[in-house]
Amino acid sequence: MSDVNHVIEPARFSIWIAVTFVVALLALIMSLVALSRINELTTITQGEVLLLNKKIGHAQPEAVPPAETEAAAP
Image 1: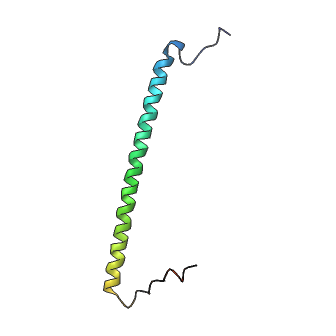
Image 2: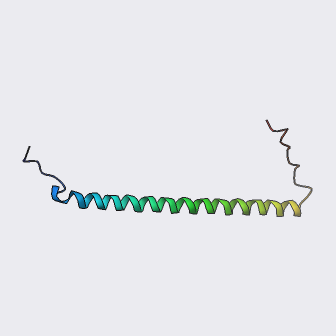
Image 3: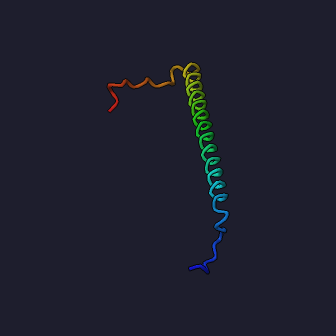
């Protein structure tokens, strides 16, 4: 068993473990930043859609169908 060739030298395992941990930590930070940006973008987009819907409703009041009540919803 002593003739096994390792891809990583056993003396450098600790360095590779530290580098892997740092890369995983960077990936976690990047994913959290991406989630917060997506959340903010979704909130802004929903606000813009509601604002446009309100503008369309004020511009064409006869074309807007009446909103359904909660009791009528299944």
